[in-house]
Length: 159
Image (tube, rainbow, N blue to C red; front, top):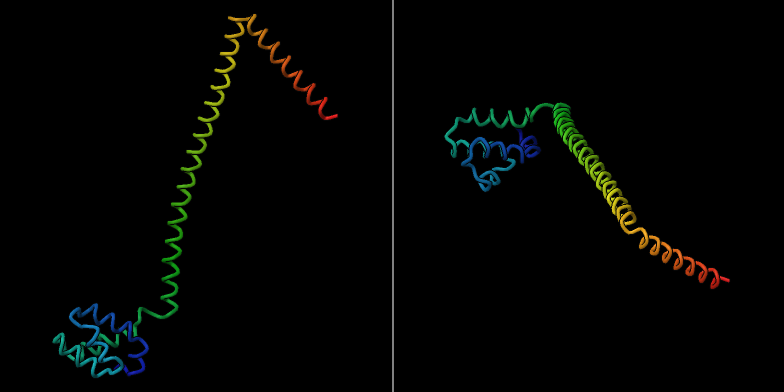
């Protein structure tokens, strides 16, 4: 049979398991019996109609089994955490691969569109020069003249 120290040491666990097994037990009733094994067993017996031996056996199992040794509980929790981490790592790897593939497609598309823009601009300039050669020479001469004057003024002001 469970003693007072064992009951007090695992009171929250015992209280939770009792409420889980017999849902009609209230927190107030359980709190009144806290620490007193006989009072707890008697109260559970009255509320549930179960035999004294059944209630005592249940409380003994909760306190003594406790879900296995501490080592077993820690090992089980570690396995669960490792499995969860493994799943997250797999999901993260998949997300990174998808992101990389999308980025590669975007870069490729961006490169192709930039290349197309440059080609289009070159073709348009070539078309303009072929169809308007005199105007193109005059514009080029004007740009060269303006550029030369600007460079000359900058050199003169830097002295």
